Amino acid sequence: MIQARALTKHYGRTVAVDGLSFDVEPGRVTGFLGPNGAGKSTTMRLILGLDHPTSGTVTVLGRRYRDHFRPLHDVGAVLEAGSVHGGRSAYHHLLCLAQSNGIPRRRVTQVLDVVGLTDVAGRRVGTFSLGMSQRLSLAAALLGDPPVILCDEPVNGLDPEGIRWMRELLRGLAAEGRTVFVSSHLLSEMALTADQVIVVGRGRLLADTSVASLVANGGHSPVRVRTPGAELLATALRDAGGTVDATGMDTLDVVGLSGSEIGDLALRLGVAVHELTPQPPSLEAAFLDLTQEATQFRAVGSTA
Amino acid sequence: MTIIEPRPPVGDLYLHDTTVGFGNVVLSEWTKVRSLRSSYVCSGLVTLAMLGLAVGLGARWAHQHGAVPDWFDAVNISLSGTYIAQVIIGTFGVMAISSEHTTGMIRATFAAVPQRRAVLAAKVLVVGVSTLVIGELLSFGSFAVGQALMAHKGVGVSLSDPGALRSAFGAGLFLALAGLLGLGIGAIIRNTAGAISLFFGVMFALDPIVDLLPTTWRNDLINYLPVNAGTQIFTTVNVKGSLAPWNGLAVFVLYPAVALLAGFLLIDVRDA
Image 1 (cartoon, helix red, strand yellow):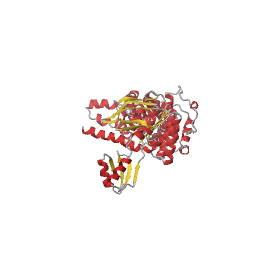
Image 2 (tube, chains in turn purple, blue):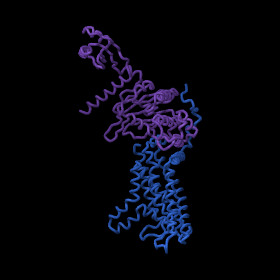
Image 3 (cartoon, one colour):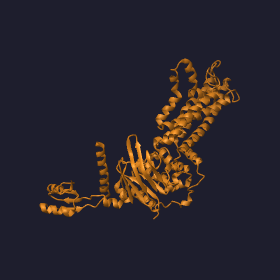
């Protein structure tokens, strides 16, 4: 279990993480979402004690990472790509990490097998594809059979089969009662993998909720209207208080008005409606809503 | 469904073995050194430099016409490869830590062992001992080869001659200290290119700066520069004013000691 409390990190004048507080619970996959530059990787580095927080704290299993002794048994981290020496073989990369924590050699062979790298164990890591490197990074995380697993963008560079494999693996680890914390900017992937999501933007916490409730609440899900009188209808819809986005020659996405309100309005105008479909609420829409608010806040803040 | 089928039951791994300690970190660092091609390249180059120059210079003096000059130092000549080897071993020392920063491996290292000073201490031990072993083997080897060749001319010496044993042993010691100076500078600078530049600067670029000083100061201070001080340990014909062999080595020790001290202080406070 991971607990962040008012976690803050400045790099010079840049505020990368700004007062983040959250709990990551065991037994489920918690997604860590945010656009690029939102502070996800920095937060991961703070959790792992690689960077020092400017203020605030973050603990894993009740202790600061640096107070863990030989932490591979407690925490496994799938680090950002490229956290290996390209001149070393996959086997020796894992062996030197295992040895530092007193993990036996046979476990190295086991984890290579788990991630499917046994055949290339003797090859220099520098010759690996991004997908193979991700698998190696996961193997390193599994070495100590830890109850807490952190992954920084684990599906980057994986092919569809690899993504599916990673998803099932992470869900399986959570089902075994482990704490699984996964950062990603891929919403569709998180919708399938995560149970809980923590959303950040500009270093601040935007949401800490279940995927289901984020989708249900966030969201002005739009209604799609297909009509030959798009221009006329759009003006009327705007006057009625709707937000209208012309997505094609004859299609409008309308937010803020219900399907029946739109239909009634079209009838009064005498405009034919060929399609009137409420779009299912999506994580993407909810996410964009959240992050847009953060962006607007920033714009206002910077002119003040 | 169990997804990671081959995972053994938790009890199968000795999960919180209290015997896990500094020795494991040292073992890990040793695995890092022996699993990189660059370590073998460095060893090969050092061997080539030491034995190659011992053979070359030994043969050259064996064919000398007439008497050898006053400054002739048979011991030092057979150990001439040390002047080249110091650079290779210093680079090896730099890379032992800078390559981890440059590649990003340091993140995996510190995630596995957050006690960063223990990591650096293990590196000191591994770099120090491995370069000492190679340095001693090659300096005694070079001494033997060089003296055997010079014996043809009757100018070779044996290990029992004054200063010979001290020099052969001291050259290996000097090389190990050069490796540790490299490691210390690597720990401070972290970037391979920058750290190697600074290593060369400290070893070879300080002389002309000291030359700027008034003559009496300059003549004193010049002997305390790293190479001038450190190489006295394998010199038997002393240049006037230079430090005595062990005094010179004691001065040379200060350079890696200061660099490593700074490294130990910085490693815990910086972001990885």
